[in-house]
Length: 212
Image (cartoon, rainbow, N blue to C red; front, side, top):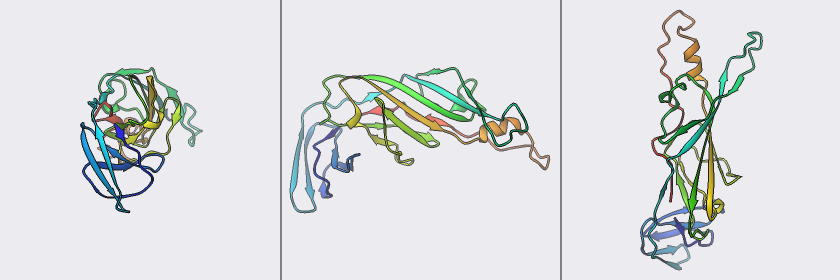
């Protein structure tokens, strides 16, 4: 969890990982009980003591809903995209779309949704979600609050301000490119050669999502 919020500032010495949260406050990222010290740029020090065991929550029960993008039924509408809602899929492991039955050639927008319980929660603890690999652009909503544009490289996201005691719901919307669908309808290039371009990995993959 996140512990010991300090005023917006920067540290010169710390024996634990530090980050800025969504309120631009410097906070300590602590994963094990113990005593920690942070020295700020003005020479002041912050002492942090953590006694509780910090138990990460693995999110391993996701529902994936996909809006599939294909060419329109009317061939004269070349500038439009046909959008089709696919049946939701239950996932207990996050893998690329192309490894999921029926999604090998699908392009579009996927929304991953999961719920989990937090007992004895207070926002002073704070929390991040570790999403692992994601392709392509993604957006996170926590308990109805849509977070600002996510860092597409660093997929460890501060969500502590939006969590609550009891049940929590997280949705992650991921958009893809059009390549996998295009591959499925163009077995040959314009010059007549076989299309050898491989399908891309879309969606969330690598880890199941961990709140800590």
